[in-house]
Image 1 (cartoon, rainbow, N blue to C red):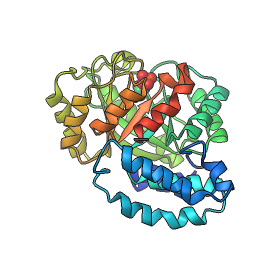
Image 2 (image 1 turned 90 degrees about the vertical axis):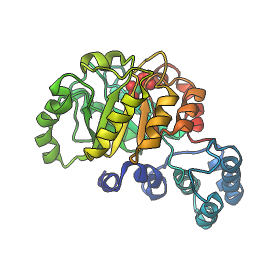
Image 3 (image 1 turned 135 degrees about the vertical axis):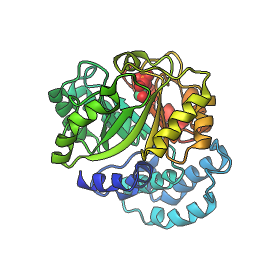
Image 4 (image 1 turned 45 degrees about the vertical axis):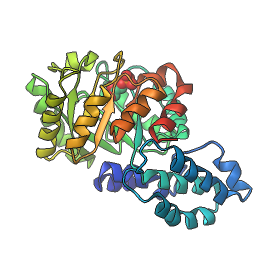
Length: 330
Ligand code: 1GP
């Protein structure tokens, strides 16, 4: 856990990118199911190149996020050739993909899954290539449930576990990090700074890594908008979203999160994501209502640095692989 925590301190995206290659004590995030077989037969360089070419030819951002994709191949190829195990090869490939800095996180709600189920789902999500698990839910979550869920996830899946708390009651010392989040467009001071103040001493005592985040609820906002007393950003008011996002950045937050609400009929409009991304210099997270690979791809293309899905994992676990692949441009 301490390794993940130290890595988080270097910046969320850097961590997500670097975690695969630095994970020497467990299975890293998978990329393609064929990786183990290929490495086991000495085919590692070919598999590596297949993934590299797929990204070269099909990644939605033709500039490869402004990176020199050929140089990235040169940098990672020796490690792929020397990878002693399939697991290590997957780590190398994942490290290369991480250079593009588009990540997927899975949200698990302790109120909707038993700890055992959460562990299972996290394990499958890890195999599908998710970069981390967020734990949180708008209602019904207690400290005991959060502890049990986090522990079960950490037992099954070696990916960072980040708390996504609805309040000070939804924390666990066993997580790797916590979003120290403020719902900036809430009308309730409790959601802006009150719950945070309640939680500060416990977080300090546990030494939990904090990731300061500006949390912005966009229409329809769903349950989190209601319980957070948000004044949701209208879906067509792109300028309002930009103003809030810049406010988060100027306040020193490390992330901006545009949230349409869990189970929203439609995600945050890609147009809004693109406009916010164009003005922001900190990473942008987008979640709520993302159910299809097409929607996930559109948001990543629009500029989301991290795409979050929750409900779809509970409802249709088989779809996660295609969503993760879409986010990563595969
Ligand atoms: C996290 O609220 C989302 O931001 C999760 O939304 O459950 O609709 O994927 P879904």
